[in-house]
Length: 165
Image 1 (cartoon, rainbow, N blue to C red):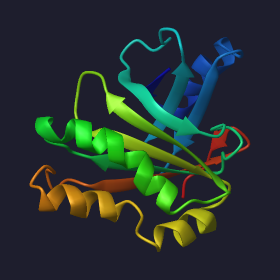
Image 2: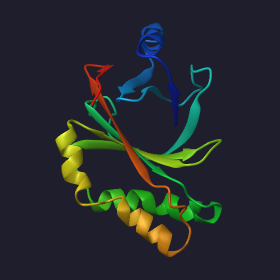
Image 3: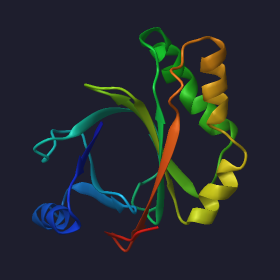
Image 4: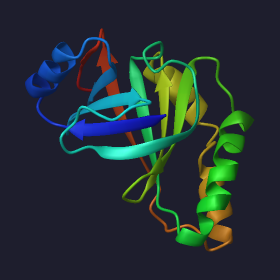
């Protein structure tokens, strides 16, 4: 399974979604950007995608489609196997019944990406207060396998059409 991402104006991305109603796509928007995600076992419809291989995932990204968080991790080459084997462990240590997630390996670029999908921003905030993903950062930093570039970006979706948060 692969997940592809592209950026564009809201109206342009809505045209892509409308032209391909049977594809698994999700539109996201925050104050800075609009993103369209395409999850598929085949090739993407996007002309210039950012491409990821889905390493692990749970839940339907449409079922939890009002709030989404992107958690970026810049990982050194030698740390990739450790990160890939431990990322799901850290997520499962702090589970939430209100979420879905995807752990993504970059195909042509860095960083790795973990996307968490939530019913509402409050669910994400409650989960995030436990600092589940900071454990990954701390473990990798101790082993000097982590480039200090962990960041989170959040997006909101309402009825399949993104709203600024």
